[in-house]
Length: 193
Image (cartoon, rainbow, N blue to C red):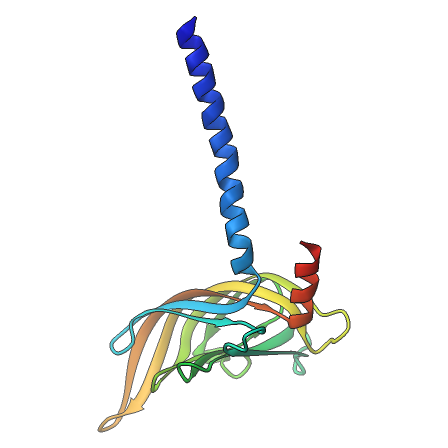
């Protein structure tokens, strides 16, 4: 009988721990998710590592801009341009992607309509073949030329072209994620807490 009581108490304790730890992890992540950021890992000849550009509107750390417009050629979807400027490191990340949930493959063939570029030190990388998975989009109800929120993931191949006794091309693998939150939408989200 003693062993049943101990087993039952141990089972209840384990069940309680399973319930508490996921809540703690979620609560700890909430503050991190209420920022605009782009985070990515690069592997290549000159630039390697993990990089992150976070935008903090209160301390004016870094800067992000966002604009949305309808595609004038076929009107199928809206396109957003997001520019993350890394002021401290004099670099940044630029996206010109559909403002809609779903997958898009950005290749050299459609770079006139879409774009993805990174400036890191003196190296400027452009997308050669990068897949974007746009997970969530919230359009601004009042300013139609802006998004309130967009987030997604990306991975693929970037390229760096430069002159060195003729044109040279280096390729880099990349994977990462990004999120944009407009300042007004951020205030709305914080006031709900």
